[in-house]
Amino acid sequence: MANNLRIAFLIYLAFLGFIDYSIHKKKNPDNKKPLLLFVIAFTFGMLIQLYVGTIAPAISDTVFNSPEYYMPIVLIVFVPIIFAYAIFKYHLLDVSIVVRNTIIYGAAMATVAGIYFVIIYLLGQGIGSFVGAENQGFVAGIFFLIFAFVFQSTKDRFQDFLTRKFYPEQFAYQKVLIQFSNDVSTVVGTDKIIDLTCSTFIDALKINKFGILLRDYSKDILTLSRGIGFSNPNCIIEKSNLIAVFNEKALVSNTPVIEQQDFIRVFPDKADRLIEEGVYSIIPMIVKSKVVGALLFGLKYSGSKFGGKDVELLNAAANQIAISLENARLYQSESEKIKIERDLDLARKIQQGLLPKCVPNLNGLDICGEMIPAMQVGGDYYDLIQLSDTKLFVAVGDVSGKGLSASLYMTKLQTMVQIATKISTSPKEILIEINKRLYESIERSWFITMTLALFDTETKTVRFCRAGHMPLLTANNGTVESIKTEGIGLGLEKGEVFDRTLQEVEIKTKSNQIFAFFSDGITEAMNEKDEMFGEEKLTEILKGKANTRSTEVMNKVWSEVKYFRGSALPNDDMTMVIVKVN
Image 1 (cartoon, one colour):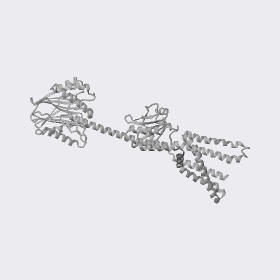
Image 2 (cartoon, rainbow, N blue to C red):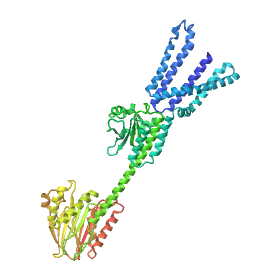
Image 3 (cartoon, rainbow, N blue to C red):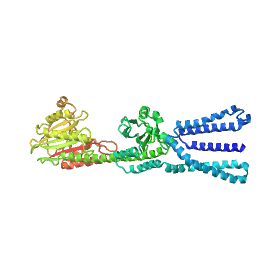
Image 4 (tube, helix red, strand yellow):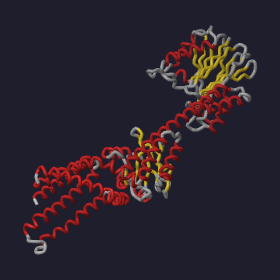
């Protein structure tokens, strides 16, 4: 009796040691709860055994004379009940696992267990003959503990061997996912990646409920991109708290999967919809702590939930999908960027082609002009429109803003100016007509400033009008004059205020006089200290240029602006037209 109690106690200690090791190995608190229930059930069973085997016989004759002392034996039924509760409450086993354990371990493990105990018995008997019969039970207990730990260390490999023999489709399942992880890394394009993913999970693995959620970067949500078995295709999940949840899961498990029991906590507004759709598991697709999507899973083809190694494989596949999708997104973004740059480069060439290709040959005038956009295309504009051998229009405009939109308005303005100058020779009348037409078509948040001047070499005059644009600078005999006529920008007002405030002046030209038309991109050019070039520096450049050609004057302006700006990037388009009277 003493030896039996000793052996039972040793077995109990071995079991407690194994459970304690398993509990500390589990990071997830939810995974520790069923192990604690196992300890309670096993302890309860051992106490009943102890009572029936020792206490009951000591206080009664036999079970037949005093059966009431042996009645607690019926409480042993609670042991399997507690085990069953732990299994079903915490989803430790599904139907397929139970069947597998019943069939495989009922046959193979019975044989192994028989061999196991025969070895223990033979070794115990052999060694017991040397240590004495009274210690044979103790020796057998020692060998039981040794073989228990040996069996624990080789359990997974032995289980894989049995699974490979009796359930080859389980290994085929793993093989499909491993092959998929290798294949998806070679696929280019988001649609092709999604096609391969769906064909693998739906066709090859026979999953009846599967969906791919992709991140909508404009709204920062996850939307259902592709799926099967969903009654509502408009499945949307907020991304805001997913990273925190996945990180929390990753701390307690190697696979940051969101199970159905977590839905209410993680997706309080979407939980009922997800459960109704039959979603049981959500596995994230994460790249560098950034959620790019998620995979939705229902039940396996066998009708059971994904768990254990299946989830580990799915998580590995999800990580590979995430990397491939992110690479596809970056590739597409780069391709679109290249295409946009190519289109903008073409637009730049078209815009430059719309500007004057050659300077009109007008006796008595030395003319040059140039527009330098801050981006590929700009909103500045200039034109030289020759009406006759003695008359020439100079137009300089600036659309509010930069880039492609501004360049489109610039093109529209150029067309209007060229048409209007064929009808009238008055800068004021031309600007009034352009404002009426432009106001009807321009966006209210946009406007255009413009300077229009008519040079007449026969009368030696310049008729000048300014619609909210920069002043006209004239240099002669070392002095520079800034001519600022009244006027507001084009497109700001329908016509009543514009027509009333617009002012036209006539200027007499002099020999060697320089006229500088420019946009605010020159005077407002900024350096690294956010200082502006200013009108004063431009004035100083013009003062001593009476005996130089127009191109030299303009080149001097560009070089001074470039030197002043230093390494700072252009902040606005720059346009200048220089007209010198010979």
